[in-house]
Image (cartoon, rainbow, N blue to C red; front, side, top):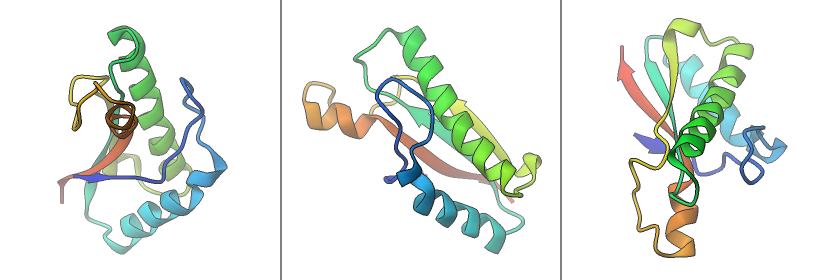
Length: 112
């Protein structure tokens, strides 16, 4: 699993920022270079919202990355997406830095 550090969204939104394009293009190139790889795009949030909203936000953010890849030619059967909400933190949500780091999109190889 790799955290895609340069995927950006406005607060509480799931519209990809144009600043995300270089990272998205790196993922796209990886997918083109490895045509048998299957991946999951996983969205995560911190716990600063209701779990219902966190799940919706993380799902829609991962769907936005998925949709970008599909629009750019990656076959649908090679990519899936899932929103995990706040259920899988990597850092403590007790600090602003931890909350920031928990808001992330991950790229996980799930098959070949």
